[in-house]
Picture 1 (cartoon, rainbow, N blue to C red):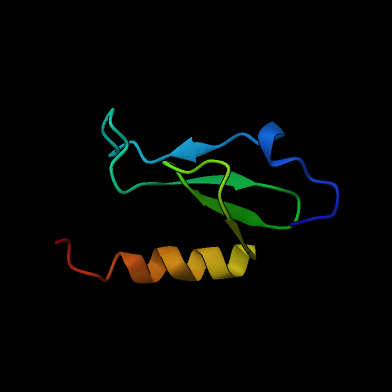
Picture 2: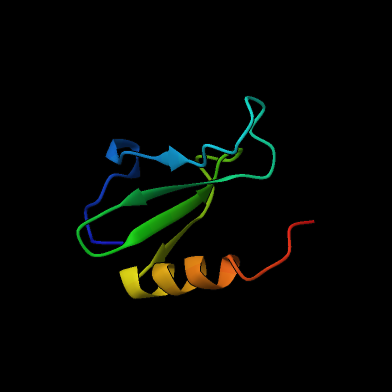
Length: 68
């Protein structure tokens, strides 16, 4: 993540498929240089920073996986 980015100030989004209890969801936010991912149940926990290219590749491959 860019130096000095305060993750509390990011605009986090959760999947529209997520229920009110949260379940096994992630939240994502965009910065100038990255997509930031966190566990929706542990908002103060670790975050993963991905390049836009890596995020696009993840989304592309996630569509190929069967739903359990």
